[in-house]
Length: 112
Length: 115
Image (cartoon, rainbow over all chains, first blue to last red; front, side, top):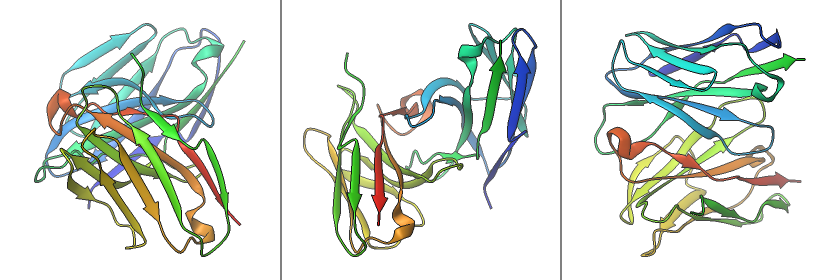
């Protein structure tokens, strides 16, 4: 069965303290892995899509990487405004559907 | 350019009632997907429509239905509401179904509360 697991569930960092969020997946044929940021009570905001193992993408203080079994979201020198829930999702090979399977998210709190 | 829009923002209903949620995709996007997000969990896939055809259905009862209109906007209907239907309902639009065309952009959501 397709499964996406994120760890840790919650993460508290001091401003400037770099860390990584993990997304491990079990899916039969990965077509794409997506990272989103979600602020409380709002819709997810698209960050990155990764398509093949070894691929990396960066945006400001965020860097996403992908292996055959997991993805990491590295946060370098985070600021309080990076506080949010980070969601990862996978799109698997299947017949003509773009269905995304989400993990439960990692809630990040960055303290000044 | 306007992003994905959803209406209403909030909705309060009682058990057994019916609800209709609406979504307008980003201009040029032909696919709309619906997700349910319960507090503390990731979004769960309900439906996807592409070019007005259903292209995916999640593990939800038949009380849930949807459709897509010629202008690519979409409606999600839920009949016979249960307390467990209380959630944030998210609409996402994308250009298509595969590769970068499946990069899904979400609206702000509709918060449904069932009493």
